[in-house]
Each structure stands twice: as C-alpha cells, then as structure tokens.
Length: 524
Image (cartoon, rainbow, N blue to C red):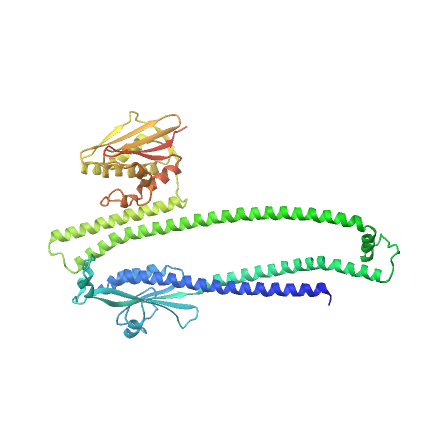
C-alpha cells in the first residue's frame, strides 16, 4: 500500500467518523428539543384549561366544560382532552369513547401541580394539571367565587387554603413530532452523505496532488543514483521520465517561473478569500437583521394575542358572573334582573364588536382584503353614513354640520370600505365630543385627490400621542378607560385607506378638538 492510498484512507475515515458523530448529536439534540417544546406547550394548554375551567368544575357547568375541551382538541397534537372531578368522575371529554374512570381520588391528590408521563402507547404521552382554587377556611359554600380579590391582610392570608377541584388530562400524540424528526433525520443523513462524498473527492484530489511530486522526485533520484549524469533525457516523453527530463533541462528557468506562478496564485487566492469573507460577512449581517425582524414580529404577535385575550376575558368573566347570579337567584327584583340582563347583552355586543374588528384587521394584515373598485358619488356615501349614525348624534344632542357645497363628487374606489372608514371616524368624533356640541364633516377636492375631514370639539390629543392613535388597542390605554369600542377602528381605517391608494392623518389641539383627514385619489 503506497503513501497516497494510506493518507487518503486515514483522512476519509476521520471525516466519516466526525460527520457521523455530528449527525448523531444533531439528531439526538433535535429529538430532545422537540420533546421539550411539545411538553412545554402541553403544560401551557393544560394550565390554561385548568384555570379557565375551575369555576365551571365547581358549578358543574358541563356545557362550558365541553366547550373548553373541544377548543383544546383543535390543537393538532392533542388527540384527547379530559376534565376529571375530585372523585375521579369524568366531567367532560373531547372524545366520547375516552374513559378516565381509572383515575382515582387518591391518585389525583398525589400528583404535583403538573405532570408529564408516558401512556401505555409509546407514541402517546399524557399531561395532567390540577384544577385548584383558594378558599377561606371559614367558607363552606361557593361564596369564595365572589370574594373580593383586592389587598388582603396577613390575617386574611393565613385564613386561605388551597383546594383541589379536579384535574385536566391531555393525551398528546407524538406522531407529528416523530414524522418531523424522521424528515429531519433523512435530511441530515442525506446532507452527511453528500458532505462525505464531497470530502472523499476533495481528499483524493488533494492527496494525489500532494503525493505525485514525491513520486517524480523518487524517479529522479533513482536516475541520479544510477550515474546517468551526462545523459540527455528525451524531452518529448509524456510519462514521469519525460517530466523529469524537462525538469532537469529547464531547472533554473522553471524554478523562477514556478516561484512567480506561486506568488501569483497566492495573490489570487488571497483576493478570493477576501472576497469570500466579505460576502460571508454581508450574508451574516443580513441574517442577523432578518432574525431581529422576526423576533420583533414574534414579540408584536405575543403582545397582540395578550391584548386580545385580556379584552375577551373581561366581558366573558362579567357574563359568567352575572349569569351565575341569575341561576342562583341572587337577583330578588325585576329591576335587578333587568339590569343584569342589560349588562350581559352589552358585554355580548362588546365581544361581537371586538371579534369582528379582530377578524377584519387579521384579513387586512394577511392581504386577504377584497376591494370592489367602482365609480360612485362620495357625497351620497357621506350623507348615508351620517343618516345611519343619527341615533348616536341625537343621544348626545350633537349636531352634524355638512361643510360641502357640491351634491356630487365622483371617486373611483370601494364604497363599502369608504363607509366603514367613515363610520369609524364619525363614531369616534361622537364618542369624544361633549354633549350639545358639533361635529363638522368637510369634503375638498382638486385635480389629484379628494380629502374628507371630520372635526370634533372635544378635549383633543397631545401631539406626541397622535401617532399612537393608529396603534392596536390604543384607546384602551390612553384615550378613555370607560369608552366603548375595541380600540382597533383607527388601525383598520388606516389599513383600508392605504389599500385604496390614499392616506389618513390627524390634527389636534388640546381643549380645542381633533380633526381626522383621509384622502382618496381623484376620479380620472
């Protein structure tokens, strides 16, 4: 076995071992990471379900419990969701064929707060989360559900005890995770084989390039050892002896030429390395910017989901609380019951408005907005919108002043979307105007665009807060904590106007009022 073959086998063996170790480590790490991510997500789902179902478990509201488990069942990895009572009875299940009777009272109490354990099927894991609530030691009925959640004294805290109401059990399928891991393994093995094959070709080529001069030197040494100093070596030969003959005959020139060639190759190699390094650095910076952008989008998504969850939870909790008051007969008079029902209806309407606004905003941001461009009379659309909001104007004794002389201004746009923007802007103007005041609606046009403005005479907005008006849920934090609405109207209006080729902006002065402007391209 010659030197070139030995070197090639040694390097190739080392590359194969290193590649195999790295691939094995990557697969093992990927499997652990996937399992940990699935476990954390299931813990989060089980905890949320346990928290949201504790009142329904206590009151035995099976319909609510069934809705909750059905909602969790929509998760692709959850094959079964169950809510089990303290006595081991099955209260709700997303699968009518499931059975939780094997979970005893003692076993429920023996579990810690959350547990992740395998089932009889190796491809199915179970997540168990206890449903708990705090109760005062002196309380013996459901009154702790309505106890105040404000500050408690040290004596109050000592009187509290943790009570277990039941548990939530989620059966989680590992099929999707295993399928994803199998795909990852196939890709990793394929990439490893490609790398090994490429490495083999490179090693063979490099070793051959390195060892070949050694062979030529050995042949030349043999010729010199035989004493053939004055022999003229034929130059026309193409084998090793021919190369050696050329080397001997042109040694001095070839040495210089070889040196120049090596220097030239070194410079070219340095230039290529510098270019490759610069390109790699540029791509690395671009990747960092992309990762930063993705992180900001993920944070914005989490903030949006948190705000939506908060705004949904508030009216839902109110509806549930007042509904339970009706069920338990806590309203003694017809007026009290009417007030409770009115509160429930108002919260239902608030939920409807919020859900509709969230759906509209999601469609627009996802690029699924459908626009129906056509020519129509903008003045007629404005008058129609004002007429539809007349009850809102009259309820606060606000007069709407129309500041446009023309009866017909044609634009090429989507009339339904324009009316939606007008409703949002006019509703805000009525909402934040003092009673017995005015709201002025104006339309101005030129050769390039048509500008619609709505002016109120309310408290106004600080200049630094004007850009925030178009943020999602801004009104819930900064405008009015008591005003109705989802806080998404101006965000939706901005997106609609921009999709229609216009722009929207606000001008305001404190204690003088606010004006909202939006423009549309003029009809050609």
